[in-house]
Image 1 (cartoon, rainbow, N blue to C red):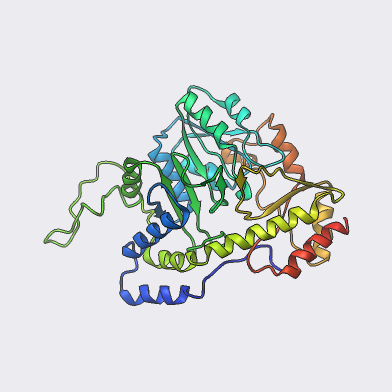
Image 2 (tube, helix red, strand yellow):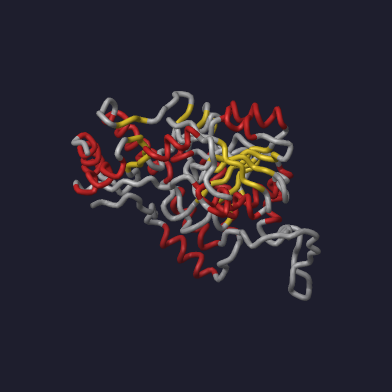
Length: 367
């Protein structure tokens, strides 16, 4: 059986990493800045993104910069990885789960409206498997209620909404560069923002609330600083950034291949009995991190495909079932429907044309 997921590592990665190892400067330094600037250029971002050591750290930093505090509420979908909700708990705020659209897997704007209270501080839409959420509707709600928008774009690097790259739209957008994402740094992430003020706040908070550019070493050998607030050790190091820089050169081809595979599935699975394709709007372009479909008798589906050498996975189920969030949410009708039927087919650059053809034919054979 071929793998459900794979890691994209450029042939240049070893060269770039060895260069950093030989430099004797392994922690955060010029390579991190080079990576950030290269990301900004490649993705046409408004400002230089702030590189961090994980997407989870990025979400936490974004919540801090958005002013989310203890007792505040942040609305998000349950259809995500647990990291999204835990980042909110890290700020001693409350995750509030809105329903999703059962035919996209993304948060439902009308459900957001119903979940807003006086304590709501921010919205956290998640672009599930790389398909952009209904951002215009979400922004309208945020503007009406004076809320910050923090996009969880862990799956959505390179996705496009109405001719604008995900990462250049909201107050904050967080990417993940974990091992199996489109772009990996081994582990890592980045936070995009729209203002100089927010960028500076993120840069300080990722390294102990110390401004590295202004806090220069004194004659005694230590940086001169007087930190007045809590900061974190969330910075990316030069080793990880060098992997990212090497892999970034391949990103256009990686995204092109992901989209080819996603479009192949959509074309060849259309009309197949027992398969419901998710919605696809012409005003946005998915990054196709995986390809989700809806099926009946899902466990039979998984076993049938596995018997033919094809892997499948839900990737993640609803996170509100975890006790840390208080247990299963009630009244999320779209989420309930999706939870029972969702299953994803693999999309990654190690797949051959024969692999994806086998996947399609295996689905067509039934279960």
